[in-house]
Length: 300
Ligand SMILES: Nc1nc2c(ncn2[C@@H]2O[C@H](COP(=O)(O)OP(=O)(O)OP(=O)(O)O)[C@@H](O)[C@H]2O)c(=O)[nH]1
Image 1 (spheres, protein in one colour):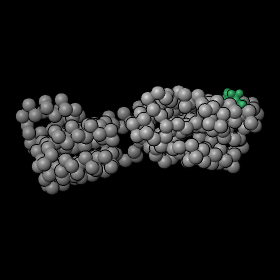
Image 2 (image 1 turned 30 degrees about the vertical axis):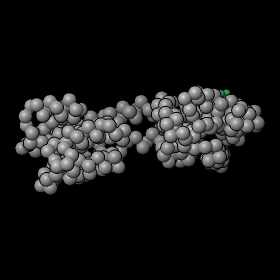
Image 3 (image 1 turned 60 degrees about the horizontal axis):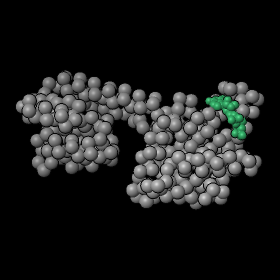
Image 4 (image 1 turned 60 degrees about the vertical axis):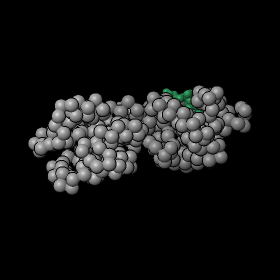
């Protein structure tokens, strides 16, 4: 995973209605605004929303089996769909239902029969809000020079993955990369060339860690942290060694890495994992750089 996976180039709207004619009318109306996904029931909507992560959901309320209120409640309970805004479009025009829908967390409530222009305008506004939110998230979580995840985002994901690992009794590995002799590179070629090199190294690392659940982040300066949830030491170490080799094969510099692995429990802390990796990095630098040291070799 890189930070780019947080944004989606074309916005998608999921329309949910048990009446095919309503699905047709709404998709014709909104196809200029976004690409359209259709669902004919609450259950189907939840499945598609989990899989496709649309930017906005337009939800009918009166549907057999699972009504719109139940569908919204379930969407809000799932981590993959909890933040997707939902607009109710419904024949239930009683204010009591409108209040219920908004209190459940709907972004908007539109009565049927609807005025096409008003629906279009409201959908347009909500999609614009989603774009603005995505942009803010991107700015908050992304390193502006390299476009990698920043330290703030890394910490957020580390907290989440640490809890997951405890619950599922799975390993977590972490490695810190540091560019070797970068001060010398800056002094020799200038700060702009140094920036360019940081971007080059970042893009090589991003290509090595582009699969879920991996995360590569710029921790600061010329230091990068790779988080490898579910990876035990052998698999993690192999990936880190491969990354170090890729940088030395494709740039004018080398990098060193220190790694550490554990199966977290209630008594272990992620900062211990980090400090073990940091100490291993120090050892790697002392061994002549351009190499990987894993903490177990030196710190049990
Ligand atoms: N161009 C550029 N340089 C940076 C940036 N952030 C940190 N640096 C430089 O990175 C260099 C890090 O130097 P040191 O900490 O001495 O490490 P080093 O020269 O790589 O030495 P070793 O870590 O022992 O291999 C400093 O010169 C910083 O100015 C940045 O965003 N752009």
